[in-house]
Image 1 (tube, rainbow, N blue to C red):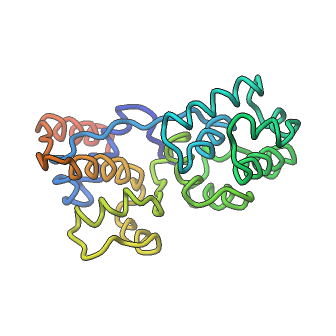
Image 2 (cartoon, rainbow, N blue to C red; image 1 turned 90 degrees about the vertical axis):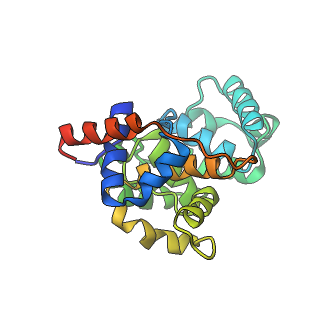
Length: 233
């Protein structure tokens, strides 16, 4: 059965298993603290929100999503299929994003993309199915699997913040490429999503302007490891 990180307790188990597999994450936890649980809505709406938010500020993405939801009520694949491109453009979508949303909606309508079925699939297989749809790139697929479905082994190898965090934490000479991030994360299976959570949080803390580290309470790490021990992780 595919492991998932849905609750705070799930995250504790995953973090404890990860720090057991790679002690370097103890340092990341001590600097960045316990990472927050990243959770988005799943299904078509969740995938749309990820596509819309690409290369935009949070405020801009929210504004466009709000206009899109108002224009297409309810926001589902049928409504996107029926909507003309000018209507979607008025909501603030670029032409490439309109093409992507249309392609996703069409794939769902034709039975080529079954979003609910991705939940129980291994992360790599679900990733392959998502990226087979025109316009869904590796990053979009990985973020959907991690944040919307809670796949414990999702790994956004192309995420620049993760690459920079890996450079800092592991004292690498250069920021690893997307290709190099794949073998780097192999020892962390099946908890690569937990590594992503921790690296994102570590990166924010390490990049603080004043350079002051954020100390994590020893109770946080102890609680996570205790939770994992009870679950047998």
